Length: 263
Image 1 (cartoon, rainbow, N blue to C red):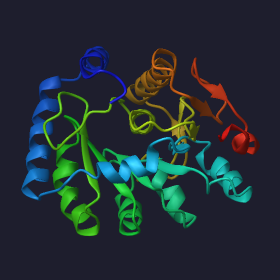
Image 2: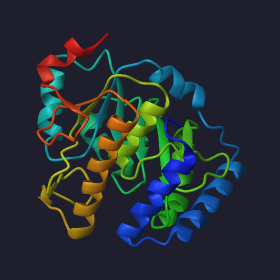
Image 3: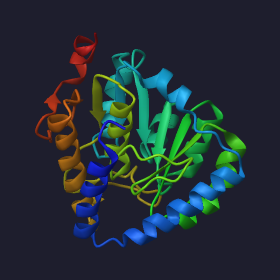
Image 4: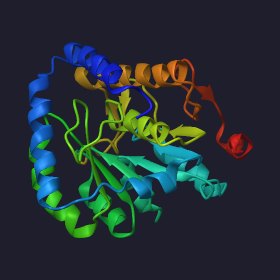
């Protein structure tokens, strides 16, 4: 974890107060998920993640409204191959539709599960995040996930219970960035992470088009924006974005320039 755990827990306490979350529910969900993983003898694939991330360039795909057009340009310019690809939840669907398998999926299981299962069967590591509002989805989906892969890492946003980890981050998108930074990845490029008032259609399985963000979602996007800036400024993480909404500390880069930032 790039951020000391006590510092992150303090930060999450502030987020929970803003969002009106009951942290005790997060702790109970953490206990349940840890017990499930232990019962199924799931060993965290830390070695796989280190190979994919340590000193490696990374593209993080968020499910924002610019995802599909940006992804098409990346494919058209053949710019994906040098990078480790991390998909945030519903963004997995956009990649698998183009026959692209993300190396890592970060999800709280409210995106399209079928696309994530297709990807895990083809080798993706899946990082499953548990919190107070999604334990039913985790309990309901973990059997199918473990039938398709054993490369499963559990995470939480409160005090971790083995074999779960806490790398920091709040939404699927910014958790991808925190995960990559924690394993020493650089540079980290954000694609489809727009932080605006529009929710991309890939965000939820039931969406057929982009929609205006509802109040809770808009607050989450603002918090994600602030967390990315905090990570970049306070912990000197090298983060870029191809989107127009650029958090402080993050550098804007055009897609055609992505080769120029590789070292």
